[in-house]
Length: 155
Image (cartoon, rainbow, N blue to C red; front, side, top):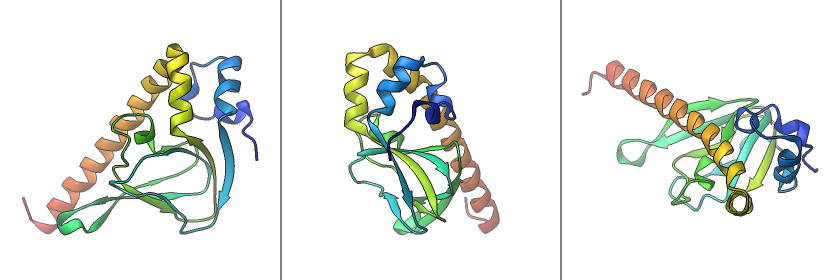
């Protein structure tokens, strides 16, 4: 299914783009429906896609001690996953999968980066919004890690 530019307005990273710019971005994406348990990202592997969650839930796990997966966050409508596809070295930093039936807008990271190279102002505006996503995600993960350390009594 094609991405309608209006669908992108629901995501804060696109709030500074005009209609023409949204149309350009929309042409590089596709809408997909996935069932529960569909893998999206794998830590340490090439980050090829940016995911926008339209509907449903996605779980995010990071690798803990001895490589054991630790739940980091649960994402829902209006949230973004796969920012590593836009920021070098283009390697995913977490594992993720759908928790329930989900509708996602999926972008090819290299196609988006091509648009950013040609139209630097689009890339700047989107990556500025992405910075907010990244900092909030890191803060959430740090909070969960601190809570886990407190629970277990380890320092």
